[in-house]
Image (cartoon, rainbow, N blue to C red; front, side, top):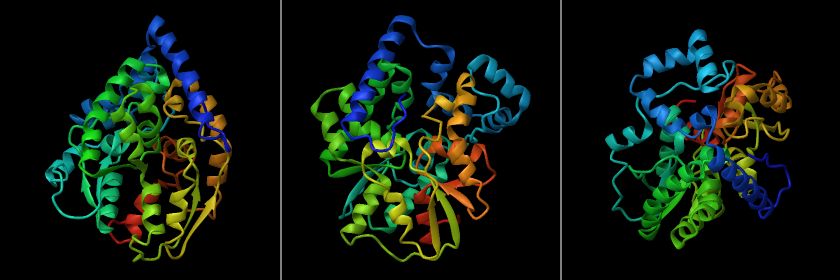
Length: 348
């Protein structure tokens, strides 16, 4: 998929993305997907299967011989650090907490669109997002039938699968919007799908309705603050962080709301370590054939993150997080997780 450069306008992103999507879609329609691309377009299914035997799956992800076999058969780079699969997805956790039941309480209502990473690999991020929204008086609903956004399928040109995922999600999200919900996503690529990709995949009124009523989580919370509705009872966090702006957040043209929100936390310092794309470009950096090129593209970012004065990284994108943690032992956090820690809702 194209790497979004600083300064790209909102109309330039769709033009570049449309060209890439159509050319890849035509190629896949004529030739089919490679094994590696087929795997990338079905990471949600693989993660769900892995969760059924999470100890075995995570052992395989950490085992050199198993990773060698995965590289040879599935095309996933042996050297790429991969996140552990959660034994219980966030959607399963949400069901036990009755978050999958629409709220009947008065007040502003949000539907949390979880997407793959927070659901299957980092449910604690999803827990933090829900906690932050509830702390700010929002009624949070997690639709139990939502599926992954399908951005990997779009990037790989598997447009039939992407359209099926889009049609499924649009159907249930549009109904929720009509019931007064605003859709919020913590993953920038998911927000980009909702706002830009879905209306182009399925050109109908429901897709446009969802696009008009969806936001990236940081942008949504910053808008709350600008209207005087964000709780400011933050505890100090004595940390210095290095922030990277994800390409898909740039494409949304909402600025850097996560950095603005972190600026509200006492004693927290955020340094801009911007150096273009992280090199992951979605699932691009997972593949064996792209691994070295991905690391070369992200070298400046990783070098800046290695600054001894910086204790951890921060970014909204799970793929960028994977790259940032590839070249350093420092953790990388989502801004929402840090907000939850500053509120005292979770430990960082």
